Image 1 (cartoon, rainbow, N blue to C red):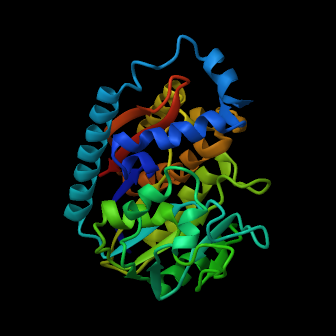
Image 2: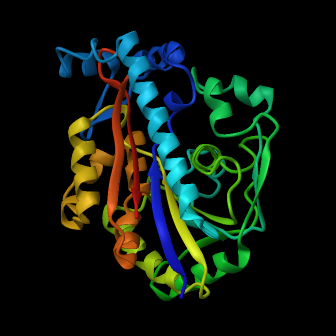
Amino acid sequence: MATLVGAFAASHGPLLSMPPELWHLRSGADMKNPSHWFQGCVYDYAQLLAARAPGFAAAASEAQKQARFAACQRALDTLAERFAAARPDLVLVLGNDQREVFKDDLTPAITLFNGAQIDNIPLAEAQRLRLPPGIAEAEDGHCPPEGATYPGAPEQATQLVEALCEAGFDIAVSSRLPEGRDRQNGIPHAFGFVYRRVMRDAPPPSIPLFLNVGVAPNQPRVARCLALGHALGTALRGLPEGLRVAVVASGGMSHFVVDEALDQTVLQALALGDEDTLRGIAEPYFNGNTSEIKSWLPLVGIARSAGLTMKLIDYVACYRSEAGTGSGMAFACWE
């Protein structure tokens, strides 16, 4: 029986990978965005500003941006140190794809990668130019300028697929990520960020698991994400004796509109293993990029299977506009 030596989770937004002096690039895009999801409803920027009066001008000041950015970097350093101290032989990475790799020709709900190598490939200049404002500036945060190749774990990945199928999960399998001029080549940013920042570009063999949390209509619902965690806990224990396994979840919390109340509800429920509270959050609250919270939800069952306890390293609400746009950043470990 394998040993789960720890679980880790981190937000991965662009505000973590570019200096606060450039955050205005993202807030400028926010002001032009007609579809901001907040608590299950859609607002344009003017409507959002009115709904959230008196607003968040003080929290989005330059001094606050600098302080909150620094807090996030300290939390990421702590998370990387705790990951290194766990000394895993194998890592399961939970993340999502934002139409970077999987396009509308195929959008699987749950995909497990069982390739022998994981390529982190820099975007071509033409691809960078097509990115929204403030995204290209954060590219180095999840892909080295020269690219990188990380070791996969095809044998263990296939064993996980078989165990999940036995547990009633119909898993898509990919040993080679789709390629083409219309998509990013290589692993997408949700994974690249944790390879770079949490595993410091020197990961042990790993298995990426894609959860389609954000692309309609086949997103796994909250209950399914929680059930997946229990199935993964059993499957991971079934890996070979002596294998030290870690799990890393990438994404969240609320964004592009910060909802501190929602984030705190989720984090407290995760810490308590309170699945009833998580199931009680209405699905529309997970629309938009806040959907990435769902990548954390399997950790409840995984941690319970191994008797691990959550420690919140930090939660930082990174506001970038008066209307409260930005990202709720959270960093946690289960030990």
